[in-house]
Length: 314
Image 1 (cartoon, one colour):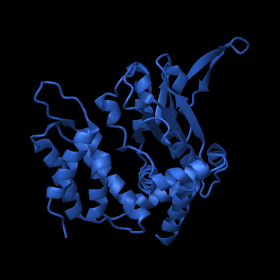
Image 2 (tube, helix red, strand yellow):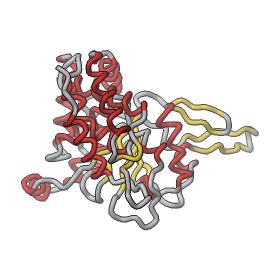
Image 3 (spheres, one colour):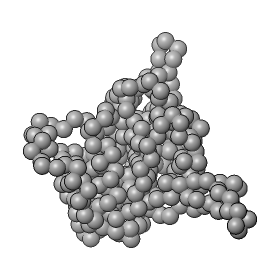
């Protein structure tokens, strides 16, 4: 556990040298990677969403690909396409950018639902099927997607099935004045991102993922997760509660957080701290106007209130 905590500390510090003043966001990204999940970041342009993905991938020396989602991008632009070779008389599959360890799906809500769905199999099964052939993706595999909540022109909101594949739904937020002043005094922030060095490798990441799976979670904490999930289904403020998959993913994330803090066992705080980012996008608020519009700020407040009302297991 000491070795794992030391490796995670190096990773945090390395990313924090570029992503200034966002330790909680960096921690959530690392937890998602260790828990074998995917991350959705919703925020305005220019706050460091893409930089976070780049720094995470290069800090652990993972194969990184960035896909810019637009309204004319096709599924084949993501998964790849079979091309006929006239000389050999056969088709050869050219792999798309999804075949990487860490994939940045930039402005994912800019593409059509058909293109968005091309990510579903990869995110859920870690494989891609093209022309009746199945290609497995190499571990570790993680998707970090971004979207802009302000501009809605030409955007396609992600459906429930797509949102449910993301382990966490977070926001970067603007930096504090002192942190932003530090960014302004840097001679070349972009060059700092490009110069980031690897402090771990792929095998280190795989070992951290294996260790996280061995973290103990007591039955009383499993009941705590179940109580939170059940409360979302019974809440008068929610039209749709958390699915069984949501509870399973919350438990995975809690195990990874325990490892980040150097423990081989979970505590209630692991669940309390992760309940909002893991569950906020898996519920739909109740509406008195007949339309159930998802507002993450609303659902986050509801889940936070549910967790605070829960009796903490001792």
